[in-house]
Length: 329
Ligand SMILES: Nc1ncnc2c1ncn2[C@@H]1O[C@H](COP(=O)(O)OP(=O)(O)O)[C@@H](O)[C@H]1O
Ligand SMILES: Cc1ncc(C[n+]2csc(CCOP(=O)(O)OP(=O)(O)O)c2C)c(N)n1
Ligand SMILES: [Mg+2]
Ligand SMILES: [Mg+2]
Ligand SMILES: [Mg+2]
Image (cartoon, rainbow, N blue to C red; front, side, top):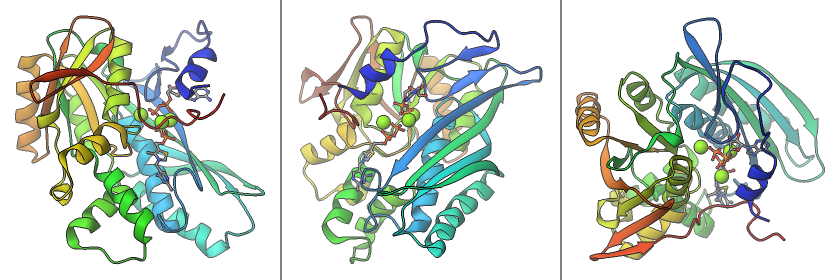
């Protein structure tokens, strides 16, 4: 069984509510309200042993990363975060101080975006700690950005470095979070532990009149590019030499950096596509705010697929990346 095939199998065939704009199939759901804004909602879970271990994230960082990864899904729709709800399942091995630290991590990030905690649930569990966060945000009516909006002729872009989180995770799995790291290594470790969701960037996309397709990088560039390709019915070509890597990865081989970027995931930067003239305009707007914007490829007509241009050759990539059910039957 495959995670994505499972999700497809449970997708309702039609909506009951006329206010629904987008249900399952993008980073978050979008629905109309009677006001000026459309509402945007999504939920994501962190599981001990799957998304973190006690030796990869501190309790504070579990809170930060849990909320950051959710806010990132709102950003991938062009939305501004507003509210969150937290469900926590706690095994006996976690004490009250640690739980408070998890909440402190969420609170500090929430304060940056003026988000309110408005509810949740607290239960016990026999084994691993599970943190499930629902976030709610808004976007100006009809301005949400979708994976299905890429067209042949578009340029493909990224709003930040890719591969850093996987590189940081590898360091953490080797040395643990109390290990010693050089300054460069620490930047990678932090990218894994405390990612910054691209909310300001989301605002620039939402405020842009042109068509933009967007997705955030949770499972790796290859997998997220496939999601845009499949949703838009297009073929994506990515230039290996155009992928932006953190200088902390300089001493690793190019192949290693490429693998981390394409298949590592958890970078929580935005991957998108827009027409060349619009990309030029977006680039200027990003530059004026001193935000990164990297052109990494283009869109062609054809069967949905993702290709990597490397050393003058074009290679079709597998839809590989982090897949929760990959090893199951
Ligand atoms: N168990 C589930 N039940 C209903 N919808 C789901 C379930 N799991 C995932 N989805 C939906 O499937 C889509 C893809 O999910 P996912 O790959 O987790 O997105 P993301 O990587 O942006 O978090 C989203 O629209 C999500 O809401
Ligand atoms: C201890 C540990 N092992 C492995 C990973 C790598 N990892 C776990 S989940 C994941 C993918 C992202 O999580 P997911 O639940 O798929 O987020 P979503 O796509 O729903 O946003 C990755 C790369 C990790 N973060 N920590
Ligand atoms: Mg996402
Ligand atoms: Mg998800
Ligand atoms: Mg995933």
